[in-house]
Image: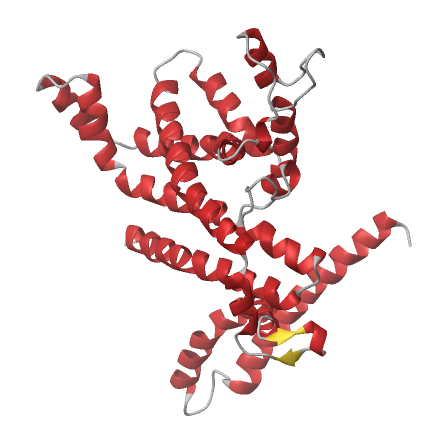
Length: 332
């Protein structure tokens, strides 16, 4: 079948299925289960109206359960089994093995370092960019350039930065910007991505470069939402620009800063593409997601790999729940 025709049929079947589901489910609710007639008409109408929203939510709930809840349960079960024993239940043996591996603790240590540096740097640079770009004539162009990396995939950004850190032997022309600049200063070219522990910070630069644009857009909107009266009152009272920024503006957008910080933290906890594309976890740059990938798809050790996946989920979940609670509080 021609791909275009297949796409059209998929759309028609999908839309037809959705329309059919909602029509038949509402007919069942109104005509069979709780018809608006008879001696219990009032009770039937109330019950139908209570159930109707769930009819619309059911497809989404089913999809989330199928594509989110089921994989979590299945991964947890795999973390308690051993593939080499035909999927036999082994309890916490995979977790114990994982905790004995030096690479796991290297991944934990590096993830903690990423968590300290990347959210702080991305949020700080984003806040600085949001404040400064509103003060210059070509601010919109600057914002576009800063936000542009958000449109690049993590792998694409990794390839770009790998060229920045590129190394050529002494005597050859350096095509990597960093080595070209270093040689211009009089130094010898370096294999930057193999130099520990600085190679971790060089990898972090890629994610900071990407996430700064996101932070700038969100924080810029928050800064523009600050009432002008408070800033004008501070100016009248003799506050200088630094005092206005740090004592007037930042406190009023503190909740937005926290949301941006935690959102970037979630990205950091799942960082994988950058490490895989640039170092593959070598030279002490391993992170949890790459460790999980190595175990699952290279060593084919689904027990330890699934255990690593559960660790990532346990680290991400509290921050995700806190973000949801904080968002609901803000909406109230």
